[in-house]
Amino acid sequence: MEFTHSVLAQDETAVAGTVVPYDLPVNPLSHILITLKFIRTTAAEANVPAFSRVLDLMDRIEVLYKGSAIFSMSGPDAVAAGLMVCNFESWGVNYSGVAVEECSFTFLVPMTRFLYSERECFPRSTRGELILQITYEAAFTGMTDVQAQIETVELPEAVPEQYLRMTTLSKTPAVAGEHDIELPIGNPISELVLFGTTIPVGAADAATLGFLQVLVDNHRHFYSHTNFETVHNMAGRMRAAPGYWGYHIHGGTYTTVVFGLSDPVIASNHLLKQYVHVPFDIFRDGRYILETAGKSDVVLRIGVDTGATTALRVIPCEIVKAGF
Image (cartoon, rainbow, N blue to C red):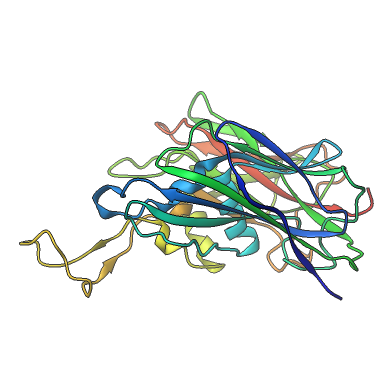
């Protein structure tokens, strides 16, 4: 068994406001790596690293098979899904907060929960059937010379049984209270990745994802009731939060504005602060997977707190049989 890691696009100029398609390889595909390079043009405010600005460069990343999406989400959601589903964390280059700094960051686009798995990857296709499509944001702010490197990892000898499909469901609740999101029916669902705009901050105890329930044919399954705070914090069972994305300060004597590098670092919020991971298939062996085939109704019920009627997104991670 051998994998093939190759370049699809080499330092291609990225233009704000454009939609760029790429033909993907025909061999079984494990994952795609999109690396964006750029020069940061301004220093971060108050010397706080602003490297996470790169996450918003892509409004949408899509993988389309014969026109149907098998991967579709924003740049920030792709980073969160990569962390929560595949345990992939990009080691971005040069995330210090100075101006005129060459930086780069890699986004993962997986066809599998297990990178390099010959059992779970996208099966062999015909040229032109499988397309990567990138929609860049309308304007690039605080950076110039944005370039894209796109690389793929194929598994030429693989005969996969299944692959991962992740697409985005979006809603902006008009009122507080319970809201139902219809989950796709037909394929087992391994897990959910959720985004809620509003989280508890300051003295405001309000969250867009205030509580969660999962109902199948009007009966609660797996998650009878869980609160935002608990299910968010439970993501720590998989990995620590990506620390260098969040703001932090150095403690010290407050008689000076300059603190020593040896002073302790006080952790703060991080990239995943607005995200929740809701797993079913804990051991990735199917014993706890959410089965949807033959069901009439599979629903994620979200309790939206008062004062938190803001945008939310739900990304179901479906396990699709490889036979089309």
